Image (tube, rainbow, N blue to C red; front, side, top):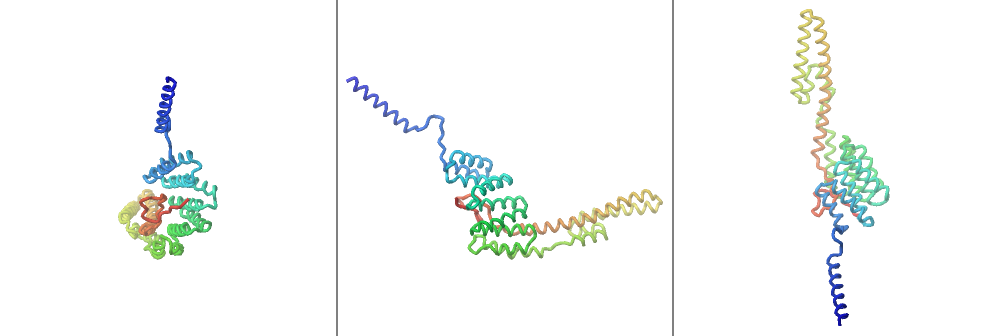
Length: 311
């Protein structure tokens, strides 16, 4: 009877242990990391623009789940984080790695496009144009091709190649979300050839005739007054010195006046070039860029074209 009682007691204790193990499958201090939760944590950091932390979370995801089908996307988004954070060289390194891993895959086309985008955002339209051309030639998928032509149009406008920009905008296909914007830009970009520029040579000639007149030509009236007064005072002082037979002082004043006079001409030409650059920049800034490089698959949805790609 005692043996039966002990047996029942052991069975009871065994059942309790099993229940406890089921209720607490891990030892205290252990953490279970779910792959989907880890990936979404990285995406969440991106949406909050916490790009350094997002990189850490995506790297952690790759380390813990190397066989996950989302690894390729995580590697791509790490490059995007660097791009969004202004670390262009680091971004390009990651995108080049993706291209080397699988040059014929869709993600390679995306990565190549983003290399061009990194140069575009860095203010290097020539280098950006090279990579956008590569995208259009090597990865002629509809989404990438239209985006590449659209971005090429913007690079040409940044190079003041207005007619080339117009032709590129017209190459965006009708089925593209960018079609309406591209057709409008194809017309608007041609206006860049008719912007109200000022002639730097004319400004220099005017400054040579009357100091300050070249600055007034481009509405730099304060500079014009300063140039007129300085040159006028030095000329008057030099004339007075020579009139009083003070040739040494007159020569010194004349020497300095020649410096002010030539500087006035150079400055007039320079500010005219700056004026023209401002006219071009203001014109470009007035145009609406329909390509929103919103690189997350946002649940809310971006306001412009979202360059979201499937992996």
